[in-house]
Length: 92
Image (cartoon, one colour):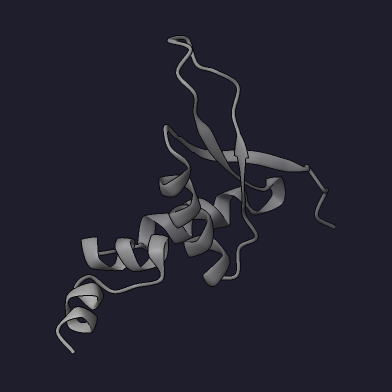
């Protein structure tokens, strides 16, 4: 039986957009994830965390380690658009 450990921090970012990209990537690979504000760090800069269920923390690490995302894929994950989509629409 897997013991429920609650949500644990997987990774933290300085901005919401980066955290959202990671959370969505994990979700698309069958690992529940959510974005939440984090406690300020030592330099008091705001940060955002990606949380995953504690019992899936190892799986999240494995999934993210296997990710080989290009800059275009990261843009797509964060915006839903492929790079260059704006140029194609404006030229039509």
